[in-house]
Amino acid sequence: MASAALSPSSEPRPSSAFHTAAQASWVAFLVFLAVGIFGRGALPPLFRDVLSIAIVLVGFVLAIVALFGIRRHGRKGILAPALVGLGLNGLFLLIALTNASAAAQRARERRTQPAPSVPTARPSTEGKSAT
Image 1 (cartoon, rainbow, N blue to C red):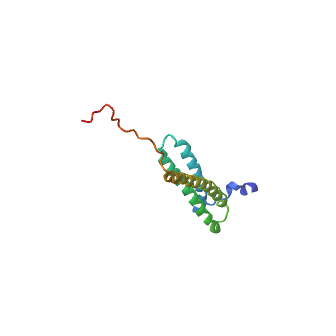
Image 2 (image 1 turned 120 degrees about the vertical axis):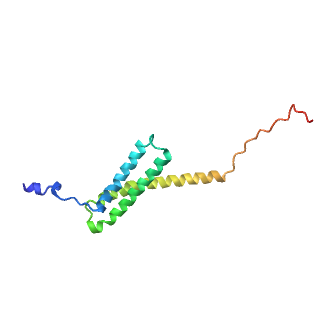
Image 3 (image 1 turned 90 degrees about the horizontal axis):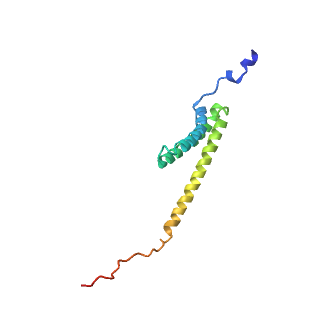
């Protein structure tokens, strides 16, 4: 009986808003993956992309908010999930920003290059009289 009193399931689990934010931060990344996989044919591409970025941004912010709760509520139940959420969402944001920056650079380069000259067809004046 004494071992049942010491089992982890009998201890109350901490449940502050910071604990919830820490859990939600990494769950947001799973939701992002689900939207990316299952939304491919069901959602318009622009909507899916904007929704995905928004979900990842929310997860990133929730992880940061959760980390601020460590001083008041302790590390248990906050630190690990918040760091996982921060790492996953932060990595995706880094990749997305890098890709967006490279795409913007390519677009700037295309705008500054002169357009290739294409010979234009001129109407033929053959066979027409000049009357």
